[in-house]
Amino acid sequence: MGRKILPAGPGRQLTGLYYAREARGMTRSELVRLTGVSKQQLSRLENGMVRLRLDHLRPFANALGYSPEQILLWGRYPGTPMGGGHLESSDVLRDEPRYEPFGPAPGQVAELDTRAGMGGGGVPSHEVRKDGRHTDPLKAEGWLFPTNFVREELHAIPAHLLVLDTIGDSMAPTIASGERVIANTAHRTPTPDGLYAIRDAFGCIVVKRLQLLRSAQPTRVKIISDNPNHPTEEVPLNELEIVGKVMCCLKLV
Image (cartoon, rainbow, N blue to C red; front, side, top):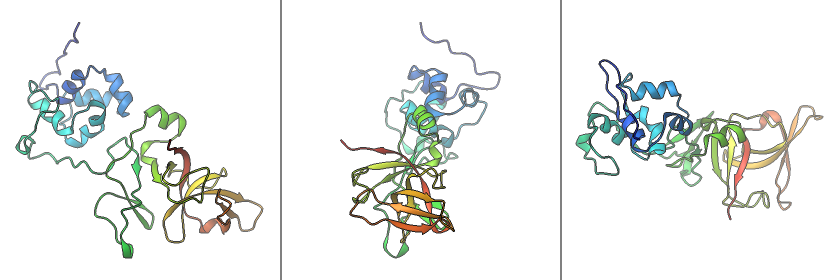
Protein backbone atom coordinates (compact mmCIF):
# COMPACT_ATOMS: atom_id res chain seq x y z
CA MET A 1 0.00 0.00 0.00
CA GLY A 2 1.34 3.43 -0.96
CA ARG A 3 1.88 6.19 1.54
CA LYS A 4 -0.91 8.62 2.21
CA ILE A 5 -0.13 12.23 1.28
CA LEU A 6 -1.25 14.50 4.07
CA PRO A 7 -2.27 18.10 3.39
CA ALA A 8 0.34 20.72 4.21
CA GLY A 9 -2.10 22.95 6.04
CA PRO A 10 -4.08 26.08 5.25
CA GLY A 11 -2.24 28.44 2.93
CA ARG A 12 0.68 26.04 2.52
CA GLN A 13 1.71 23.34 0.06
CA LEU A 14 4.05 20.40 0.22
CA THR A 15 7.53 21.32 -0.96
CA GLY A 16 9.97 19.56 -3.26
CA LEU A 17 11.77 18.13 -0.24
CA TYR A 18 8.67 16.10 0.61
CA TYR A 19 8.31 14.78 -2.97
CA ALA A 20 12.04 13.92 -3.19
CA ARG A 21 11.91 11.96 0.06
CA GLU A 22 8.77 10.12 -1.01
CA ALA A 23 10.33 9.27 -4.38
CA ARG A 24 13.19 7.55 -2.54
CA GLY A 25 10.78 5.61 -0.31
CA MET A 26 12.43 7.10 2.74
CA THR A 27 10.77 7.92 6.06
CA ARG A 28 11.36 11.18 7.86
CA SER A 29 13.18 9.31 10.61
CA GLU A 30 15.58 7.80 8.07
CA LEU A 31 16.32 11.19 6.50
CA VAL A 32 16.86 12.73 9.94
CA ARG A 33 19.34 9.97 10.78
CA LEU A 34 21.29 10.45 7.54
CA THR A 35 21.49 14.25 7.69
CA GLY A 36 21.43 15.17 11.37
CA VAL A 37 18.65 17.70 10.74
CA SER A 38 15.99 17.63 13.45
CA LYS A 39 12.64 16.00 12.72
CA GLN A 40 10.86 19.23 13.63
CA GLN A 41 12.93 21.25 11.15
CA LEU A 42 12.42 18.63 8.43
CA SER A 43 8.66 18.78 8.97
CA ARG A 44 8.72 22.58 8.71
CA LEU A 45 10.69 22.45 5.47
CA GLU A 46 8.50 19.77 3.90
CA ASN A 47 5.20 21.42 4.81
CA GLY A 48 5.99 24.87 3.48
CA MET A 49 6.31 26.53 6.88
CA VAL A 50 9.68 27.92 5.76
CA ARG A 51 10.32 29.50 2.35
CA LEU A 52 12.86 27.09 0.89
CA ARG A 53 16.27 28.30 -0.23
CA LEU A 54 19.03 26.26 -1.81
CA ASP A 55 21.13 26.38 1.36
CA HIS A 56 18.23 24.72 3.25
CA LEU A 57 18.39 21.81 0.82
CA ARG A 58 22.13 21.18 0.66
CA PRO A 59 22.19 18.87 3.74
CA PHE A 60 19.62 16.61 2.02
CA ALA A 61 21.19 16.45 -1.45
CA ASN A 62 23.61 13.54 -0.86
CA ALA A 63 21.11 11.48 1.13
CA LEU A 64 18.38 11.84 -1.50
CA GLY A 65 20.54 11.76 -4.62
CA TYR A 66 19.10 14.97 -6.10
CA SER A 67 20.73 18.37 -6.46
CA PRO A 68 19.32 21.26 -4.37
CA GLU A 69 18.03 22.87 -7.60
CA GLN A 70 16.12 19.73 -8.53
CA ILE A 71 14.50 19.48 -5.10
CA LEU A 72 13.55 23.16 -5.16
CA LEU A 73 11.99 22.96 -8.62
CA TRP A 74 10.14 19.75 -7.77
CA GLY A 75 8.10 21.75 -5.29
CA ARG A 76 7.15 24.24 -8.01
CA TYR A 77 6.38 21.51 -10.57
CA PRO A 78 5.42 18.37 -8.54
CA GLY A 79 4.62 16.32 -11.63
CA THR A 80 8.06 16.76 -13.13
CA PRO A 81 10.35 13.69 -12.83
CA MET A 82 13.71 14.52 -11.30
CA GLY A 83 15.62 11.29 -11.80
CA GLY A 84 18.52 12.98 -13.54
CA GLY A 85 16.64 15.02 -16.18
CA HIS A 86 18.30 18.10 -17.69
CA LEU A 87 17.73 21.46 -16.01
CA GLU A 88 17.98 24.67 -17.96
CA SER A 89 19.63 27.59 -16.16
CA SER A 90 16.43 29.59 -16.65
CA ASP A 91 14.53 27.00 -14.60
CA VAL A 92 16.21 28.15 -11.38
CA LEU A 93 14.42 31.02 -9.71
CA ARG A 94 16.31 34.26 -10.11
CA ASP A 95 15.83 35.22 -6.47
CA GLU A 96 17.49 32.05 -5.23
CA PRO A 97 21.27 31.81 -4.70
CA ARG A 98 22.99 29.45 -7.12
CA TYR A 99 24.42 26.25 -5.67
CA GLU A 100 28.17 26.08 -6.20
CA PRO A 101 29.35 22.48 -5.72
CA PHE A 102 32.76 23.43 -4.32
CA GLY A 103 33.99 22.74 -0.83
CA PRO A 104 32.46 20.36 1.70
CA ALA A 105 28.67 20.36 1.93
CA PRO A 106 26.96 20.57 5.33
CA GLY A 107 27.54 17.32 7.25
CA GLN A 108 30.70 16.49 5.32
CA VAL A 109 34.24 16.49 6.71
CA ALA A 110 36.64 18.86 4.97
CA GLU A 111 39.95 17.61 3.56
CA LEU A 112 43.07 19.76 3.46
CA ASP A 113 44.44 20.33 -0.05
CA THR A 114 48.16 19.78 0.46
CA ARG A 115 48.92 20.42 -3.23
CA ALA A 116 47.04 23.71 -3.55
CA GLY A 117 49.52 26.07 -1.87
CA MET A 118 51.24 28.79 -3.87
CA GLY A 119 54.73 30.18 -3.56
CA GLY A 120 55.34 33.41 -1.68
CA GLY A 121 52.53 32.82 0.81
CA GLY A 122 49.81 32.94 -1.84
CA VAL A 123 46.43 31.35 -1.14
CA PRO A 124 44.32 29.59 -3.79
CA SER A 125 41.10 31.35 -4.71
CA HIS A 126 38.85 28.43 -3.75
CA GLU A 127 37.57 27.20 -0.37
CA VAL A 128 39.80 27.76 2.66
CA ARG A 129 39.63 27.29 6.42
CA LYS A 130 40.85 29.90 8.87
CA ASP A 131 43.03 28.70 11.74
CA GLY A 132 44.35 31.62 13.74
CA ARG A 133 47.01 33.34 11.66
CA HIS A 134 47.03 30.44 9.17
CA THR A 135 44.82 29.87 6.13
CA ASP A 136 44.56 26.30 4.85
CA PRO A 137 43.20 25.45 1.38
CA LEU A 138 40.54 22.74 1.16
CA LYS A 139 39.75 20.19 -1.51
CA ALA A 140 36.69 20.61 -3.69
CA GLU A 141 34.84 17.71 -2.08
CA GLY A 142 34.52 16.64 1.53
CA TRP A 143 34.12 13.19 3.10
CA LEU A 144 30.76 11.86 4.21
CA PHE A 145 31.00 9.44 7.14
CA PRO A 146 28.12 7.63 8.91
CA THR A 147 26.62 9.78 11.64
CA ASN A 148 27.02 7.04 14.26
CA PHE A 149 30.70 6.62 13.40
CA VAL A 150 31.40 10.33 13.84
CA ARG A 151 29.41 10.60 17.06
CA GLU A 152 30.18 7.30 18.81
CA GLU A 153 33.66 6.40 17.53
CA LEU A 154 35.25 9.79 16.89
CA HIS A 155 33.26 11.59 19.62
CA ALA A 156 32.99 14.69 17.46
CA ILE A 157 30.84 16.56 14.97
CA PRO A 158 31.74 16.87 11.25
CA ALA A 159 32.49 20.60 11.55
CA HIS A 160 35.32 19.87 14.01
CA LEU A 161 36.96 17.16 11.89
CA LEU A 162 39.62 17.52 9.20
CA VAL A 163 40.99 14.87 6.83
CA LEU A 164 44.74 15.17 6.22
CA ASP A 165 46.71 13.53 3.40
CA THR A 166 50.09 12.57 4.85
CA ILE A 167 53.36 12.84 2.94
CA GLY A 168 56.72 11.32 3.90
CA ASP A 169 57.94 8.40 5.97
CA SER A 170 58.53 10.02 9.38
CA MET A 171 55.57 8.17 10.95
CA ALA A 172 56.18 4.79 9.30
CA PRO A 173 55.19 2.08 9.96
CA THR A 174 52.22 3.57 11.88
CA ILE A 175 51.21 5.83 8.99
CA ALA A 176 52.51 5.31 5.45
CA SER A 177 53.04 8.17 3.03
CA GLY A 178 49.81 8.87 1.12
CA GLU A 179 47.51 7.55 3.82
CA ARG A 180 44.93 9.90 5.29
CA VAL A 181 44.13 10.61 8.92
CA ILE A 182 41.14 12.26 10.58
CA ALA A 183 41.95 14.94 13.15
CA ASN A 184 39.59 16.49 15.69
CA THR A 185 40.39 20.22 15.56
CA ALA A 186 38.43 20.83 18.77
CA HIS A 187 41.10 18.89 20.71
CA ARG A 188 44.16 21.17 20.89
CA THR A 189 45.84 20.13 24.12
CA PRO A 190 48.53 17.39 24.01
CA THR A 191 46.82 15.17 26.54
CA PRO A 192 46.55 12.27 26.53
CA ASP A 193 49.83 11.43 24.81
CA GLY A 194 49.33 10.23 21.26
CA LEU A 195 49.17 11.28 17.61
CA TYR A 196 48.45 14.93 16.85
CA ALA A 197 48.44 17.20 13.82
CA ILE A 198 50.76 20.12 14.52
CA ARG A 199 52.34 23.06 12.69
CA ASP A 200 55.99 22.72 11.74
CA ALA A 201 58.49 25.59 11.53
CA PHE A 202 57.11 26.54 8.10
CA GLY A 203 53.47 26.61 9.20
CA CYS A 204 52.66 23.34 7.40
CA ILE A 205 50.55 20.68 9.10
CA VAL A 206 52.37 17.46 9.99
CA VAL A 207 51.42 14.42 12.09
CA LYS A 208 53.64 13.50 15.03
CA ARG A 209 53.46 11.59 18.28
CA LEU A 210 53.42 13.94 21.28
CA GLN A 211 54.48 13.19 24.85
CA LEU A 212 53.83 15.78 27.54
CA LEU A 213 56.83 16.19 29.90
CA ARG A 214 55.04 17.35 33.03
CA SER A 215 58.14 17.25 35.24
CA ALA A 216 59.92 19.86 33.13
CA GLN A 217 59.68 23.50 34.14
CA PRO A 218 58.28 25.14 32.16
CA THR A 219 56.25 22.25 30.72
CA ARG A 220 57.75 20.84 27.55
CA VAL A 221 56.49 18.48 24.85
CA LYS A 222 58.47 15.73 23.15
CA ILE A 223 57.75 15.52 19.40
CA ILE A 224 58.36 11.94 18.27
CA SER A 225 58.60 10.38 14.81
CA ASP A 226 57.73 6.69 14.81
CA ASN A 227 60.40 6.12 12.17
CA PRO A 228 63.69 5.86 14.17
CA ASN A 229 65.57 7.45 11.25
CA HIS A 230 63.93 10.78 12.09
CA PRO A 231 65.08 12.74 15.17
CA THR A 232 62.99 13.48 18.25
CA GLU A 233 62.51 17.09 19.32
CA GLU A 234 61.48 18.90 22.48
CA VAL A 235 59.75 22.27 22.58
CA PRO A 236 58.11 24.38 25.30
CA LEU A 237 54.37 23.70 25.45
CA ASN A 238 53.56 27.35 24.81
CA GLU A 239 55.47 27.26 21.50
CA LEU A 240 53.63 24.25 20.09
CA GLU A 241 50.80 24.86 17.62
CA ILE A 242 48.35 21.94 17.71
CA VAL A 243 45.82 21.67 14.89
CA GLY A 244 43.97 18.69 16.35
CA LYS A 245 44.18 15.19 17.78
CA VAL A 246 44.43 12.35 15.27
CA MET A 247 41.44 10.05 15.83
CA CYS A 248 42.02 7.39 13.17
CA CYS A 249 43.93 6.53 10.01
CA LEU A 250 42.30 5.68 6.68
CA LYS A 251 44.63 2.84 5.68
CA LEU A 252 45.43 1.89 2.11
CA VAL A 253 45.15 -1.77 1.09
